[in-house]
Length: 95
Image 1 (cartoon, one colour):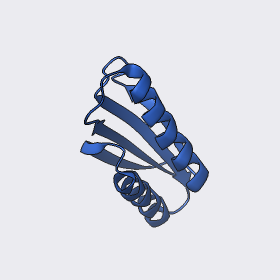
Image 2 (image 1 turned 180 degrees about the vertical axis):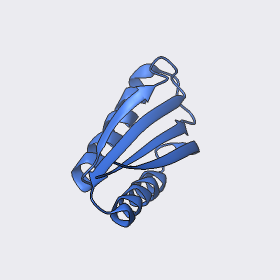
Image 3 (image 1 turned 120 degrees about the vertical axis):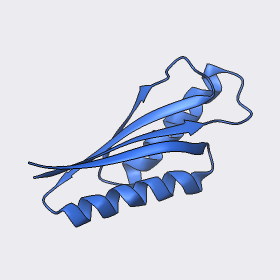
């Protein structure tokens, strides 16, 4: 079994409220869930209105497939232009 994990941090430009941030997060999460077979959730910076931290995981039996899937998710989120990616880390675990 192979588990892939991404922690990705975004910065939202021109945002002035938590309500606006929640709308952006909800859109990102729902679009990723609908397009990819991964789990995604907001994992930090819940009270910071210009910062989003998302956790994304995928499980499978081939390392190359998991790596490809996670890279596709990162690319998809980047091309949404909803927020700027400031940092991300990827980890793939073989069990």
